[in-house]
Image 1 (tube, rainbow, N blue to C red):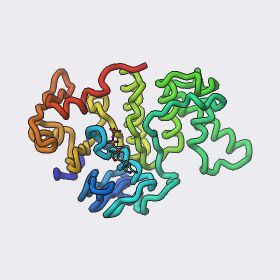
Image 2 (image 1 turned 90 degrees about the vertical axis):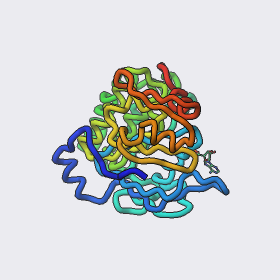
Image 3 (image 1 turned 90 degrees about the horizontal axis):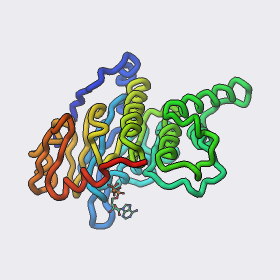
Image 4 (image 1 turned 135 degrees about the horizontal axis):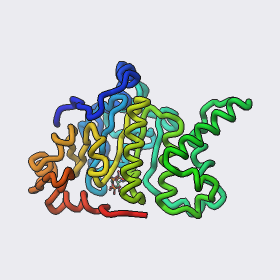
Length: 288
Ligand SMILES: Nc1ncnc2c1ncn2[C@@H]1O[C@H](COP(=O)(O)OP(=O)(O)OP(=O)(O)O)[C@@H](O)[C@H]1O
């Protein structure tokens, strides 16, 4: 396994530096997840620090979503331990903001964008008075504005495009200022300009509030400028390290057990080699 040493592209602010005195936002020790004979990953030791942005990569079925479920407390580890901000992972953890893998919200014909974002504040105490209600409304409004969704905040969700729905999910996950942000392919359905915007927004939120980000993605290039480290899962094995440490021909060839070539072309990473290529290009292109 490569070094767990963190190198930051973006030096932490004072707030984040203070937060980094606290326990790691996410800590896995000796973690193994198996379904029957199938081991998704094993011997996983991972600390994700406050303010850190970790990209989680790997082919279909390598256990990326399952890792997020373990952190959400909805899937138990087969072996080992998992802590969120020093506490064992558990369901309904208010410290976690979650952007689930995209599902269509076609059925939610009556719910509107502002309602969906407001649900991200459920469980938080805002009081029943005017001040509490006003503050709550402001938080929802700010979150909607941050993803450029104010124009359609009152439109029923079922009438919105996939990309518009996705921006609302991002706002919902960010509105409560969570300590840990779990993002399951949040760039799907977004066109390249919104991919850039949403990944920048999530990274800025992490720096501003000290939130730790675990960001599952099939395509690293849109997030490369903001990634601190990469966790790459393949067929029960994994590597963790900076993008340079992991995204190179030697490491990926070892991980895939076949020859993989990684090159930088115009600031982008290009991965060549049957399985890896499929992983890195399966979702390439623009979506609307
Ligand atoms: N409850 C379960 N019981 C048995 N197998 C499961 C269960 N949940 C997930 N799996 C299997 O574990 C594997 C990993 O699933 P997971 O969704 O974590 O993969 P992933 O890396 O997120 O894949 P993708 O890139 O396709 O979204 C899959 O083969 C899946 O079928």
